[in-house]
Image 1 (cartoon, rainbow, N blue to C red):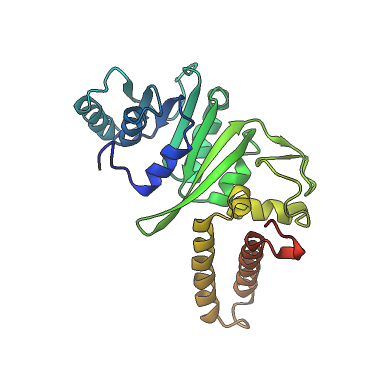
Image 2: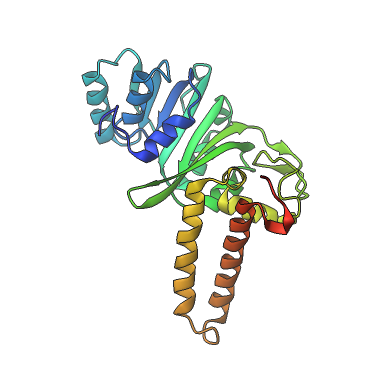
Amino acid sequence: MTGDDLSARLLTVAGMVTPGMYVYDVGCDHAFLSIYLVRQGIAPGAYASDVRPGPVETAREHVSSEKLDEKISVSLRDGIQGIGEPIRPSSLVLTGMGGPLILQILNADAGTAHSFDELIVSPQSCIEEFRSGLIGLDLRITDERMVYDAGKYYTVMRLKPGLTDGCRCGHERTSYEVDESVFPELKDDHCRHIYDLYGYALIVRRDPVLTQYLGFERKVLDDIAGELDPAQHKERFDLLKGQMADNELVSKLMEGCAYGNSND
């Protein structure tokens, strides 16, 4: 892979960065994303950092080989602490790590996190917990994409500082921008659970990769349920039934036919 030959996942991340923003790629690995964004003219410059000396050295070599030393700075750094005031406008990118680690990095220096114009994140685990954790960080999801790459599903989100005031489901403040005319019958904690689990923006857009993922998840749940004896594993079976019901509900919401609601 080179700076001009990104994986489908990293291309999706690159596509979420607002053109013209200086990029802070934290956990940059080999700096392929930073190189791509600068070479394509999407970002005027980049700051690439990683906590591991090996990838930092390799990133420096890649940047030098592309003759981009004047536009891409590579540093050894743990998270976002000590970055200081970012060049504006700027985009903070956190990918290639689990959801709990991204939350930990943001929580460690929330002031710095809020100093960016946008944050592009791609948590690779604990997605529902990650989305729900954004409320405590006063960050909201303004856009979201899903991509299938090398046999795995990835979610990429654009975040901005500040929560959304109120929504029809009854929550005073939310971490997603909600059009109240959509899915009005979803209420209370079930609304938040569904949006945190599958992604409000993905559902509203009827994201085709989310549709594919729902089919994949449905088959996995059906296979597991078929191997369980409901009498011997009642608690586990009831949990599966709830997961299957959520899957079916989201599938219907994306078809625009739940509760007789159509968005066509």
